[in-house]
Length: 429
Image (cartoon, rainbow, N blue to C red; front, top):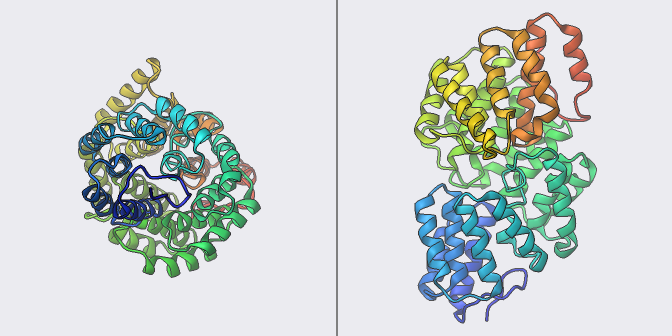
């Protein structure tokens, strides 16, 4: 019987199936294309290989192909499996069916018994995982603590280190996070996750020039069809914007993270594009109505209903910018109804952010300030990394400036977390 990279047994007697499965998992976990073909080869070599069907289901789920993912996980459940396989299938079933709380409980139980099952841990290890999108207060520290408990089982493993280092850095342990990420990067630089983590390390350490140099050297060796290409281009665009080079950021918007033929995960296109356009305007750059209209229409076509907190507040931002009051109020109403029913974990934070953006657009800066000041203490509940959540702080900063409250703006800047990249060039003018 073959084993995976961590020595866990694969429930197949086919060496070809095991090799194809391991290759597919490596591609999926490092965010390179080709995992689907690998899982298909594993299934062709052993049609009853439950983990291969489960891996294919997980890939389809992260690609947003939920009907196909449901069929694939049903095929996995119909195959003979050992205890680990049955448990892994249960985790993926709950994920695919949208039962996030149940999925997280299953992940906790699974990793207690099989801590180095990276395919299961990957559902939770990053900022878009089950803790990151939970909407819970304290989820940044919760993710770091969750990975702290698993760290002894992984040692210096490069895959785990890519996620662990970013999690502890986001939680304020910057020097430790940088050491872990740099070690992971040295062990395997061909990993989209570690490139992403290093970009965040540069952001949190206030090293925009280092971030630009790294991404400009790393991205040419990646592929446009890699799952992290667009988002890494967004990080590069942000560094350029903060350095005052907005035109380079807009070029990357058109060519990568805001491109019409964007090949990556579609939620990333929405929140990266909206965030960059809004930051550029906060810094004083002219609005491009056509780009915002494209984003609003894209959101309505692809994400007609609220669901993912990080996505929802960026969709609301696009609706606020376009003055689409009916759509915005309808979206807020759905979120508030679900909150009242206990079905929207982020609670009232996203509606508050949506109304703050709308007030800012109406030039009701005192109204936007009041809402944002209320929201900031709970900011982590809206989802996303520190770099993404900074959009709220920068909006409040700009509202202070436009209201003539320079002292409040300076106080907000002074209270900003130590070391992080500062406000975009031009925001204080």
